[in-house]
Length: 254
Image 1 (cartoon, rainbow, N blue to C red):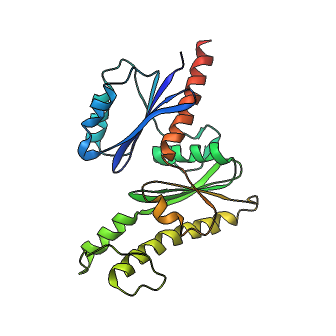
Image 2: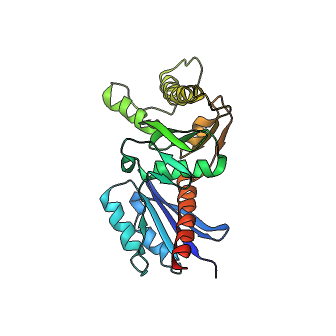
Image 3: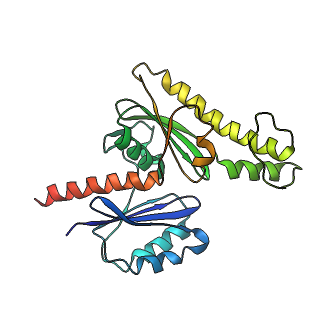
C-alpha cells in the first residue's frame, strides 16, 4: 500500500491542506480562519495518513484548532521548522531557525523545480521575495506588505476613503486607479530590484522566477521576466520534505 501524506500550510490568512498518495494529490482545499472548525469535518472522512507535516506561521488559536483536527489519529505530526540545510538548499540566514517555515518550504519547492538561480516570490498577505543561487544557497530575501495590507494602510493613515476598486494605468487619471497602480508599481518594483541584485552574482547565467500566493495572477503580468505561476508552492515544498523524511525513516528502520 502506498503511504499517504497529509500536508498542511497554516499561513497568515488561511489554512491550505492536501493529501498526497505516491505520485498524485488526492485532494486539496483551503479553509479560512473564520471557518477553521470545518477542518475537523474535512479530516474526519480521511483514513489515518502515514505522515503529517505542518508549516505554521499563524496565531496560536489556529495551531490549537489544527491540533484538534488531527488528534483523532495516533500519528504524531511534524511541526516543520527551517533548517540550516535541507533537501539541497543551504540556509544562509544569520539564524536559520528564524526564517519562516513557509518561506523555507517555498525555497525547497523552487529548488526542486528549477535547480538553478531563482527568485522565489510569494504574493499573499505579505509579499516575500527570496533568492536562490545556482548552487542552491538561500542568499536572503525581503518582506513587505502585500496588496491588501498596503491598501488598508493607505486608507487608515490618510483621509482617502474606500470607493470602487481601481485598475492599473501607466498614467492614472483618477484616485482609485492611482492607488491601485501605485501599489502594483511598488510591489513589482521590489521584484525587479531583487532580480537585478541577484543577476549581479557572477555565476548566475540565467535566473528563473517563480511566484505563488493569492495575488500571483495580479502581479505576474507586470513582471518583465519570464515567470512561472506555481499554485500552493508551500505545499509543494512540504511534500518534498515529507518524501525526504519517509526515505530517511526507511533507511533508519533497515
